[in-house]
Image (cartoon, rainbow, N blue to C red):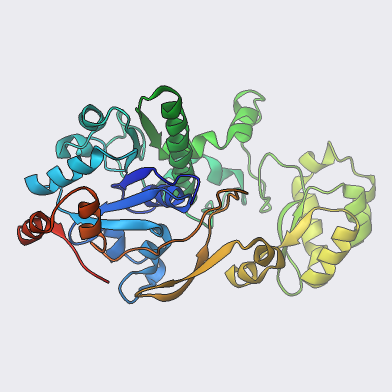
Length: 397
């Protein structure tokens, strides 16, 4: 029994951020009903990285475990009635439609809260519910570019590099997850539901609390260096450096200590609070040249022995096999009815009394339609009639 057992979530979201947020709720035991078109959610048909599957592609599989699938046509009167019936017993309704779409479909907060005043309604968008950008697509890389963060790293004059993960989507998902939990807590105290709004632009902006405050309050310009320093507001050396057989990270050590370890005499007399800023490119370049001479393993051993912050640069193969990752049980494995044995990142928060579990893998489209409608009080005849009318889709696996 997970910590959210007994709570029901209607997940009407697509792509990554919304489904990821809903999956987090499911990992904690909530009954998450994936409400999708009778042809299946968009993500089922677009495989990130080209990774397909037997019946469920990897993109959908990774974002929709611990959910039941209800396939329903919300544009049909009968299908919409099905959803409104389910709203009566739901605790959370989550959607990431473009602004205005929920109202056109008749599933906006005002409408649903009249049906169920206790409902926590989570609305996710790219830029907000109104304003000059409401018609723009909220896409991860586009928002990374707008965030300002991409010009805090790398070389001056060179094109900025994107994050190596779908960063804005993930952060927005966590904002929605946290918002849903906070609103549930409020409801348990007061009995009232509420509207929770999350947008991608605010999500990626507000995590830069420290960096943006340095700019707005400290009046420090965001100025990249000639060398690929890892962040404009961190002193040198700070970044990824090539070794004889790979790459390692070195993070703002005391220059005297670093100079002793790598054999760079000029560092021994430098001032950590002055030269590390004013001579940043020189320090980076000298560190880079010294670190090329030995293997990653040898440098990491020497740097750690001197209490210098450092670490490996992994690819995914190295990450998955890392000793701490294995110890933590960061990845979970389970058997999926159509995709076989699945290994995927698990839920990162641990609870001593109510641990998260994987009770079911991502569903095929409509896998639980009959089950969900039976739970809602629909008899076999009504379910059969809805299926015959094309208002729902159902499949047994």
